[in-house]
Image 1 (cartoon, rainbow, N blue to C red):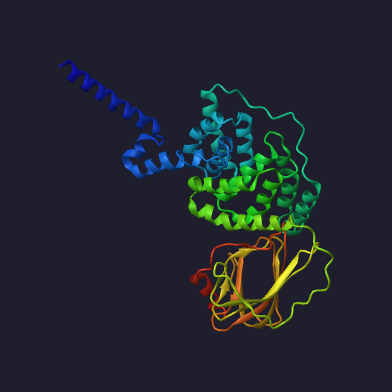
Image 2: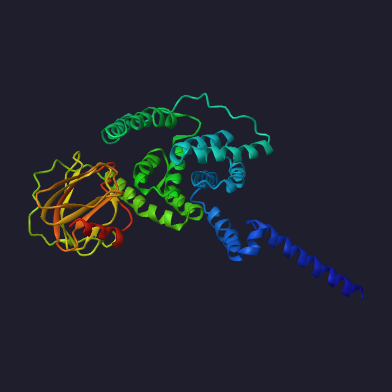
Length: 398
């Protein structure tokens, strides 16, 4: 009898221990297991059981990335839990405050103000007093890079929005980016994470290059994209991957030894054209006569021939693009404006960072010679394909 009682007791203890162990493994709120058990499983075993355990980013960096994604996308209900985790992972209260300040400029004041309210609750529960601005020396930005950035802003922004250009140079980069309350490397990581989370890949080349100039490794940049997929969604992360890939390729090329002084280069007519990549074009497109100037020149170009009905994807150029229409009839459109028809001899100027597409008209092929300049090694940022609906709007003007 005693053996039976002991056996029952041991079984009960074993069951209780197993249940307790199961409870300890659970990270998601209890309601998740009642409503979406699959989500609970992925939360426990993949997000926190695998991703958060990966060593490619330190826990502190993962917290910076996560809080940046949550603040920039306005997910206020999640801020408290991840601010607590950030503090546990070694992020200082003043760094959390500066992260929020940084993101006010990159995702808007309303998101930042909402984040402050939720963060204050955590600070109060942990008896964290008021945070003061750092008295350390301000961060010195690299002079040559700043001169190039300022020139770009003055050339592309000031003619249209002079006040925005002034605030960009004087406040955003002349004050915020020089504050010592967050290291240059962490400030770049926060900004890059927010841009990916809010779906702004066209802004990523500049800030990804800046992040790596400030000490973020390529492995850390790649891991940040992976981590953000769980907090901003796979589409946002996937859109960032090709942009980051081109940044890596450009930096690899820049790291190569400088070439010897070049001779005059002639790109001969008649070379076999290459097919336009399906990721960036719709329809039959041929690219020929590719050329690229040697350093310090930043210019490059090619002749692009579109069959009737074919076109580029939406894209932007960091320093703009010029198109010389060689033959046929083409269409070009800036996002939010009407499609324009172009004919042989027309010259089209697309300003920096303007989302646009161009291609042949519906009934006639078109060829143009395209010229663009690179910034930080990047000539173009490709975006999503032009839908048939958007393309067909051009037929109304012909």
